Image (cartoon, rainbow, N blue to C red; front, side, top):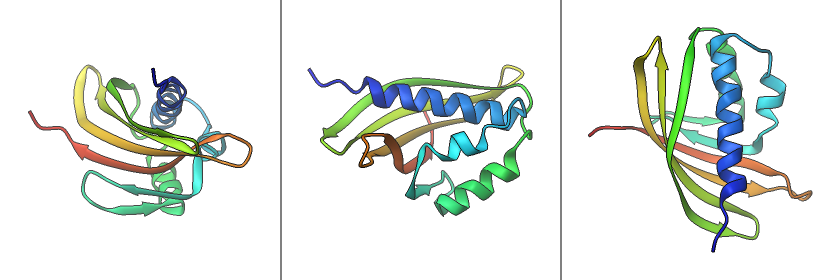
Length: 130
């Protein structure tokens, strides 16, 4: 059996930090950014492409902009597991005051650095539509 749990756990930990950052509850930006590869890339739901610097700018802009944000994760799926990382997908629902703000699907490529630390290497998000 293939064990994707370290990758699923990393998504949950990272998204909890993002939830707290966007809510303005904590100053976790250095810790949060340390979870991403220096070669990180992202395709946003609106098809904008970001690198690690663009991600940092986005996080800086969004700090405290969504008080009460709750991020709910579901539908975790392992796609590929290999010696140097994995590819997984999940569904992410963001809500404030029990009102849905966004519902999206995400696919993530993770890599292991030389010390074995898991890092986000690529993220592609798509808004969910029934």
